[in-house]
Image (cartoon, rainbow, N blue to C red):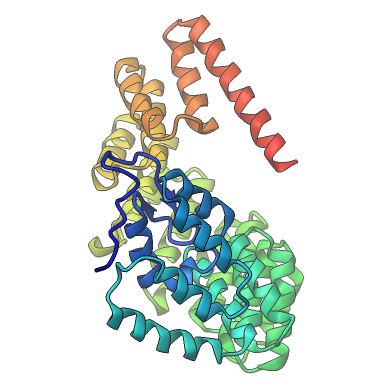
Length: 383
């Protein structure tokens, strides 16, 4: 008869393990096994890592932790992984047999493909830095267009458009007729403020009337503060193809030249199906910048109803209430934000502003001290 291992003890375990890639928290060893069975690609860096083994030790499962340490030296990944999943008789045999087939097929793949798969996971989560770390490993073993393109995308997400442009350029050399690669390279050059390079790529494109190329012409004009010229380019793009991004940019141009009513009227071109969180935040921001705080508050309250768990939304709402001299509601909104993100400098700074507006000078100074302490901690971590 199989042995039954309890989930740490008869008492509830309050110390979860959070898997690195999925972000899923588990509270028992059985939950961890289930996670590793169904998310094996995202669990391979965790299952024999020291923090995970220490967590198993913390559950009181010393004999299991000992078996896991014995598996650390096993070179064959499939063997080590299946042995780990079988360390207790918990998972169905047919599930393990099915997984074994998947692992065998996966191990036959090229190493660069395995790294790319990991990178693609992080890219889909818009975590550019982690995605890039895997793509760089993949590029040591192979160079191809999808890999170069995705590396460039990862760098865009990571805020490094200059380096991203290099990868898009290398990809375009391998596939010179690719419109997608050309557009990615143009965008990277614009974000890197290499406007001459971006313009040259637009001028040498096969179809210069493509709406995305018109949009990028607008972006160049926008960054060069020629807002009326940018507006014409965005409007030309919109005339060819409906895209909320084009409408937002036209409204941004109106805002930059202080045509507040036109900016808000233009925003109403956004179709109802696309009046999402971004739309509500944008409309609230326009109203606030136009000095209409009641309407800004009304729009952001709708945004909060759509997404209650975003500390940033509550912080902006608190700021609008403070600027509208309703300190009671400002205090209420910032309290919600603090509960969700107690160490966020942005949240704490707004809390400090509200305390100052309330005349609570000592609490204002305490919050500022907390912000400074948070910055020091972050600086040490970076170091």
